[in-house]
Amino acid sequence: MIIGVPKEIKNHEYRVGMVPSSVRELTNKGHVVYVETNAGLGIDFNDQDYIDAGASILNTAKEVFEKAEMIVKVKEPQAVERAMLRQDQLLFTYLHLAPDLPQTNDLVSSGAVCIAYETVTDNRGGLPLLAPMSEVAGRMSIQAGAMALEKSKGGRGMLLGGVPGVEPAKIVIIGGGMVGTNAAQMAVGLGADVVILDRSIDALRRLNAQFDNRVKAIYSTAAAIEKHVLEADLVIGGVLVPGAAAPKLVTKEHIKQMKPGSAIVDVAIDQGGCVETSHATTHQDPTYIVDDVVHYCVANMPGAVARTSTVALNNATLPYIIKLADLGYRNALLQDKHLLNGLNVMHGKITCKEVAEALGLEFVDPKILLA
Image (cartoon, rainbow, N blue to C red; front, side, top):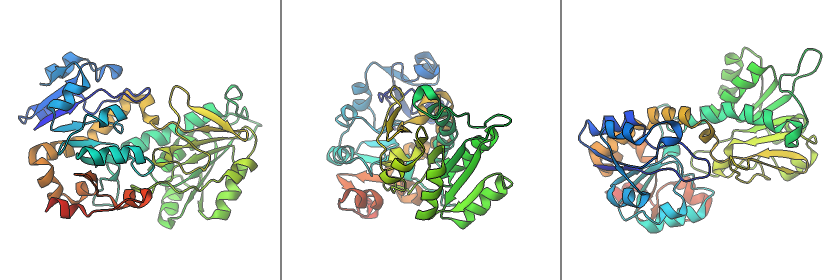
């Protein structure tokens, strides 16, 4: 198969779809890999590194899209990239379509076959290609929140862990999954007062055991969210409904009643955010203030630690890239039900039920299209 790796063009996005070691795995199996010049330069992988791994370097993204049968990226394709997709071309990347009708319409119009990292599943019911970035984002959320609480950023001027004689900040984490667990790990390490809200009793038991009761694991209800959010100095939104838009659990009324200078880090912003006042921001301009509450809603948080994120992501995606290249997308999807769950758009049809429901569009069973 001919595989293309374009340079990411989203604001301050330095990750790359494939690192040289991943490219070598594909070229050693006889596949052809084209990489856009300087695609990995932001994380210290230069063109020669890719050439040594067996790739060919092309000068523009247009050339990469024209030659490749499969495009491997990190972030959702921007409008200029979506315009370069063609009928039956395979796109393998994060998509986050539920809150993004323009992108969905463009992918449908392209006729391309679009597999989203974030809805690929595994035998344990997990999301193996979302997990590494959720780990990164969860850990980053605490350092982002710490900065948002600084007075110069509009925050309360609080140190998360306090100092002897001064109470630590209260951090409320909504969602006890991968994001929430990793956020809690960092917050506990800094000495903060940590509350985690989740609706899974099993998750709450796991968190209590993991942190040896150093966090307060609370069953999530509307009343519990309201109580703890209004008491919080920092709120971390780590809610995920796979493939679907995130539920708005923190409302405008909550924001109005929060402490002046408190902060929110909405990690769920890729799926529309779990805070009613959230809208996506960039690393260039990461925060804004609503009702004296600092909002950090960067839609590609792991891009700030791009080298760590890229290598972690490649470790997870490489087996699937190899499977798609070796078998072709039809055979790969038919043989692997978990990879099939990643199929969001195919030949002008929405094949992910959660995306279709979120956007009010027609859902088509992917098995019908693959038959």
